Amino acid sequence: MTEVAAPRVRFRDVRPYSAPMSLDELHGPYDGMIDLPHAVRWQADRLGVNVSVVGWRRMAYQALLAEGTVEEQRRLMNRDRLVETWPILNMDRRVRALWEGRFPQLRVAA
Image 1 (spheres, helix red, strand yellow):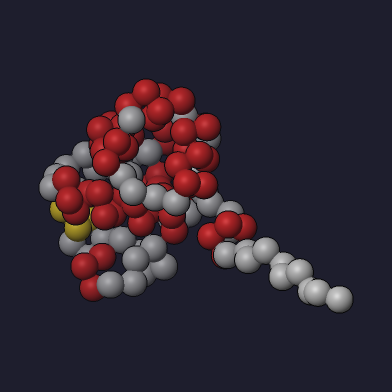
Image 2 (cartoon, rainbow, N blue to C red; image 1 turned 30 degrees about the horizontal axis):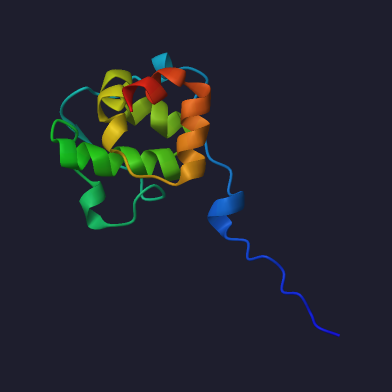
């Protein structure tokens, strides 16, 4: 009798992700500096992230989308900056599906 291996289940495939109910809840700064919580990004570059610079904003938003709580997203992300940055964000397909499913305007931005 041959055993059939169970399909591999990765944490990212079952992990619950967070998102607010409305993009209008995102009241973070449009420009300037933010500090990411340690639970969102563990590296030292999490402090003093300049969201005015697209590369730093991209890093911060990707981390907040994947690891942030709704409260952290509300406090640190800006609605307009998210829409602007959305097309260049790299994230797990489940995170993208959650946000684009809840906010169709992000699909249009992409």
